Image (tube, rainbow, N blue to C red; front, side):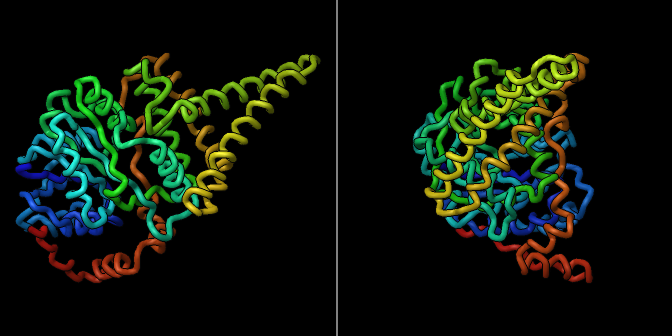
Length: 379
């Protein structure tokens, strides 16, 4: 391999950005490595943090067009000098050896992308921990070969990305699924390596979880509209996960019919039975999954799957309704329909959950102190 370009799209990531960049610079890489920080029109102090790193010899600042995450990543890919593109998100902290581990996959010339394994951040809240445990459980069912790699924690072959036309800038959530499907259709293999680990700071709190799950659901519908043969999902988002919101939508529809029947003086028992039976079935399936995850990972948090995933299903139902309305109204497709900037990064709760040294840096910034000089990547 002749080199790796690390692309980090940055939008309102001041709470996590320094840790993410420091972890990249601390990687031991035995080949040329550059870091492209893509400034995507932040409204917080992210641009100032990027300025602190601008003089580092391995870092370049790239300006993004302000059209969403996919467009920002594409800007970084187009500016990259090396044949491999590591795409790392601003809220992801690579663990030691992440780059070197994933580079092994590219000894096979037909590997188009390789993904690492997400860990939840220490001290993460309930919803963040459940999201990561659910993802870990789905990853555990996958062999090294997959049909979907997730951006934010992956390395791509630049030639392969250019061959399939880069990321679809009309998509919000789901642009990584889309490019994965196109890479597979072009004949490339995709890999997941559980030994390449990175800590992901998931969105915190009920509102942020609900917002993100709505976006996931909306983006998934956009994805299925573009790839109808993927209606049953993929290796990371299997058929059972795809079925859940559709089944809950049916349960809610039967509940509405039961209410109308009661108002008209007719027996609603059949409709209530159907609605209750469907909801009970979904709950039991998630309870079984939660117990299995709790035993596998020895974390009782997984027992919250039935409650948390019911919220996820409701969010996806809302996304189905909104997507259908916009499609009938012939509204144009926009990335912001599914991907909205996170707000928990500036919240008081997220602030006090931040690592102590990170809080100290923020307080130092507020007093006007300069940031520590960034380190050079190890040879």
